[in-house]
Amino acid sequence: MVLRVAAPLAGTVVPLYTVPDRVFADAIVGPGVAIEPARGSRAVTAPIAGILVKVKPHAFVVVAPDGQAVLVHLGIDTVSLAGEGFTVLAAEGSPVAIGDPVVDWDPAAVRDRGLSPICPVVALEATAVFDAATGPIQPGQALFSVAGPGTGAPLS
Image (cartoon, rainbow, N blue to C red; front, side, top):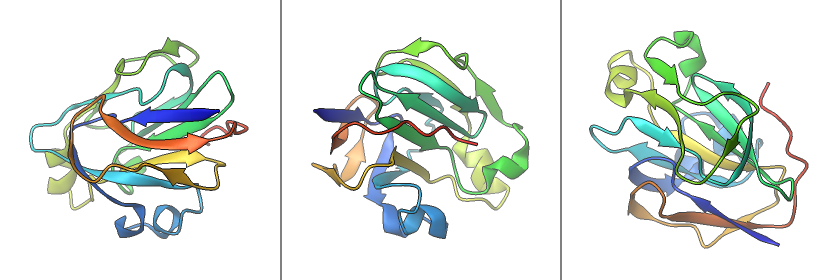
């Protein structure tokens, strides 16, 4: 089965290896891409339909019916902000459709605090993604595809 992952926010798609965090850049968490947020971008939406199994202000995981999980991480080292500047819009455990709002944030404020606002979008426990988009992207547009079910390991 092929899972098509949609862009969760507006911005510019860049290779995962450019993320300034080795855990993402080296695809230790899983393969995917990253999105440099567009100016004025705030809403972050579900990239796949499924269950929102884990929600933190700076990151969330959605698991598809086949078990494949996708992680969206808002910025690098943003856990240090302890939720400041982030508003969670959806409850953990709730079903979501592609494009449903999950978190509201201000990437410019993250940048102003000296942190990178780049957003890795990763297929957890997958071996590879394909058909990855490049360049400018809008929420809901095709971001990448992943084949095969995963186990849906949650964000800790």
